Length: 103
Image (cartoon, rainbow, N blue to C red; front, side, top):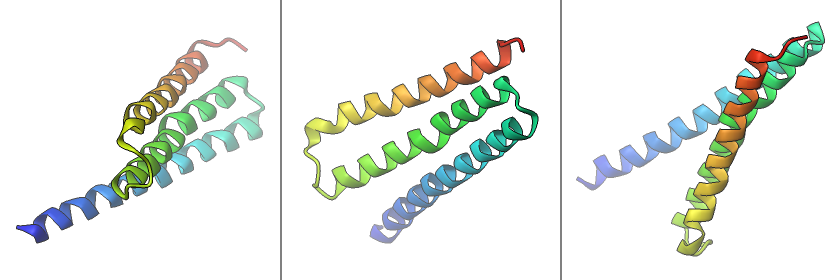
């Protein structure tokens, strides 16, 4: 039973790490599109994707590791969640703005 729990924890960690890397890649590709076409909409899209995926996942992942290892007190769990949700909100906000901006 412990082996299944350990496997699940490793899978969760691997998926979180994979999502972070993949989100950074997608944000970088959008940034390359902005640089290639000098499009402000693509710039906002790349910032939004990067905030929504890479930054939010890094904050959540690093925070959960620090909390699990006891390096951060449990009283920091809600502030870490707030920071993660704020990055997600800002990312979606930038993406929405990129879809409605006129050049």
